[in-house]
Length: 140
Image (cartoon, rainbow, N blue to C red; front, side):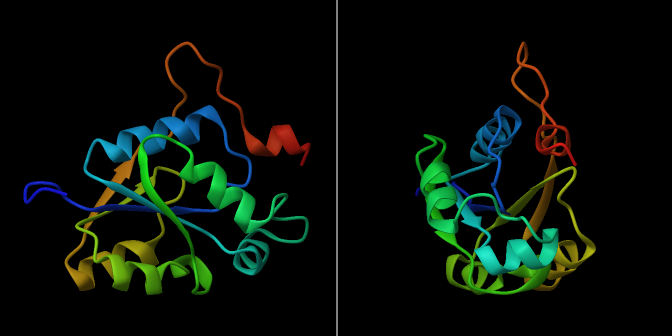
């Protein structure tokens, strides 16, 4: 990382990885070297309910790590909407990027308290690709 580059962190469950997720990570990586923190199984279940996650954390982290825009993927070790707090303390990012659906007041407040830029990005598929909603795909 050069002096001018800003460390960027993105967090999420990434349970049903879609083209809009890849596009979101691509956009976040344009802000600087991208570190992704994937939610651990128990926390995803606590936040989203029974039947979640569909895929274990090791598999979700592996898939995210294989995306060329991602410098490194880790698994979260905290709880709640700020389950990545321990990883944020270790990585000390300049920017915490969220998608327009994943922004939470707790995340914004954390960033304000710790001098981290809070970037809200759109989560849209690449032009020409269809938008796929996870609730429709799951049938829920």
